[in-house]
Length: 376
Image: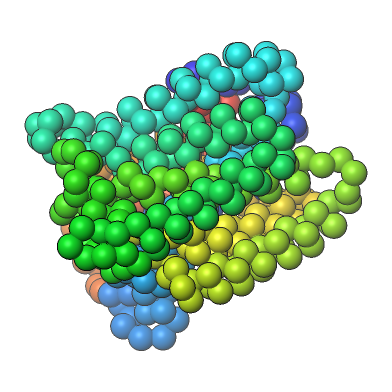
């Protein structure tokens, strides 16, 4: 990884074309993973009903079929990866050519995949506990294949590959028979994706004999990234007013959600096997969020509220890894635990969770203010 320091004086972002809203949305997404979840659950312990209880339920993955807020966090990040590559790889194509861009894609994917192995413990518990496919590994594979498609194809090619992967995955999951079960089953342990994981995915699997980031479900995850590429290509257009872009993104998002739920009537919305209907619904919500952030942050220039998210967003992987490696809760307990937390009574755990969030913001701000941006 390297430190990128060429910044504009007034905005704190690289001098090349950059959407501040994209950094803010990425940071907003990561914030729910590394900090907000702890705050909400700590607050939930103080109130078992009302809005807090509703929000706490939204920060839990649905057991299998369905879609809650927390089920959008991961696909939103993959979607943002796709949007970002339009600008980063587009610049690389313009300045360095295809060969150098292909190498950049391969190098970044490999480094991100290795970070994923490290994130889940690496070899600390022996090779049998090595998790080959996980969150970062899925991002790496989606980036790899979506990046190659973006670099090699025009917008129509991106659309064709995106749709083709979704239809192919649907056809395999619907019509390919699972030994001992048959075809067209989407229940946990009875579907083709879970069967292939149990049969061919070695070493540690997150859910016993299968993995939510498994082999076959990587195909539609690439489509999630390609949906982000399409949104990025749209945002990069110079022949439309910003307000019109926002409206089109909102319309596309609503259409994606509607098509996702419509398809879900036959091919259910299931995050753990990343169904095609899930891709469309989550991609639609992601597009709506992108439109809102783009309008507020980049069109209306209301940025002060979003700057803490920008700090995180410009070092998202760094913050994600730091939260895994460093026990921030233990540090927070040293600062406000024991008698201090006790003094707040039932809100003591909430105070600790808030301090954890403040530590994350402080680290992200420290890196941002010193123009230290670790890029894979």
